[in-house]
Image (cartoon, rainbow, N blue to C red; front, top):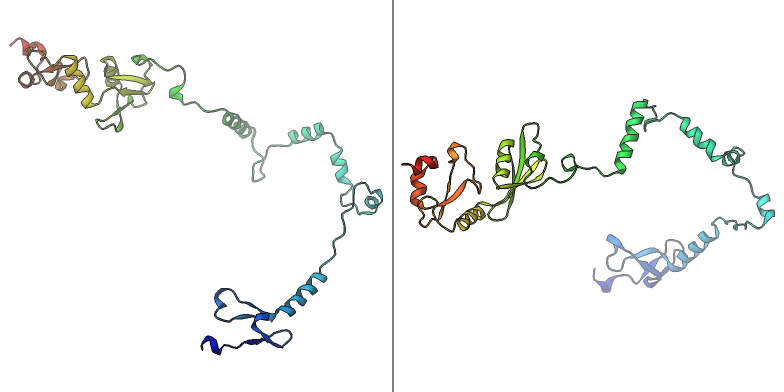
Length: 263
């Protein structure tokens, strides 16, 4: 069916009269297709709305507080027991509240120990908590006596890689003390130390400090050697590393300095 064959009038469901489609409201939603209209015409709709407004209950006007007659005639919704409670002294009510036992959310009475713990938690929540590792004055960067190992005897060490990425690991307490004493790390707090140099920065620092001169033969050097070999307990620290040429570094290997120089 095309639009030209659609009906131009419709029968109202209330007055049962054929009226033009302009007298009906358009439908909305899924049923709003083409010339679809609602069932009631505008006139019948207005009559029904007028009848509904006339049937609404009338609301009594609000009386003013200054009108003593209206207040006396109005019913009193408050019972006689409520004024007695309102006139009671606040101190008596407060004392009565304290005399009641503490109760949980389920309504069961709590023992005095639980009440004391709950009050202590509320008092502690008001004050900001301080981390136990950060209490007291901040230790000096080279003060190893301020370090406190964990239950497993470990200290947290932080540092950064050559690309600037941060890392952390746990090391033995003795190693942490050695690194701090030999100027390779500093103390951050009682549980943590920080590695000062990355691998790339450490190599550049040692070569610049020794002016690219081999510690053993005095020639040009561009490598780093450990005075106390790592195989015998040495560490990569500024006090244990020196600049060395490639030949001396390979020849010394894991020997002590005295053994290498006395051969």
